[in-house]
Image 1 (cartoon, rainbow, N blue to C red):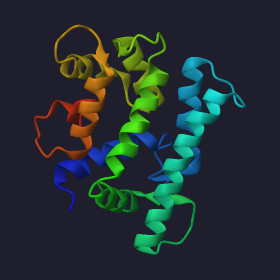
Image 2 (image 1 turned 45 degrees about the vertical axis):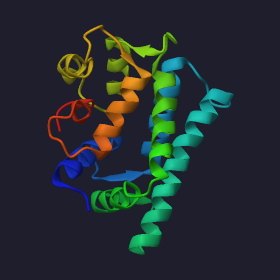
Image 3 (image 1 turned 180 degrees about the horizontal axis):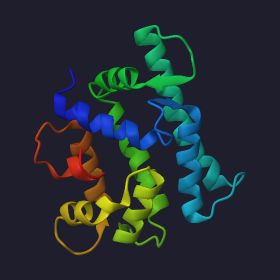
Length: 184
């Protein structure tokens, strides 16, 4: 059962995908994210990197839709509402195999956003991530300062993976990973 803190974080995540603030997610929201990530690197449709990031997002969409349809016997209306989203996460966060899938997606996104291929994300790259995911950039300064635990001006892939675990799984309201996408 999701805790209230997890629900708040997952509602934040839902809003990051819901670019048009419609209260529902559609396949186009996932395609938009993949396209915007690809644009950070100048990848064009039809190229291998573009198709790879797109296929990751479409896999995620298809997995969600299949799980929601199976679990909730929801009609296939091509949308995911907030209740379905939360139900999906209540199921997958209790599935030990999901963490591997989640970390693979985060690693792929990290590799795209790390445009200088330094193995770290700087504040400019973090800002690009916020723009891509529909997060107001006014939160970048505060968020980056909080998640840059050692104050070196960059966040490593290991740090991002650790924080994403906290974001999804932690019930500690003071966990740093809770704030990686701005206030919850």
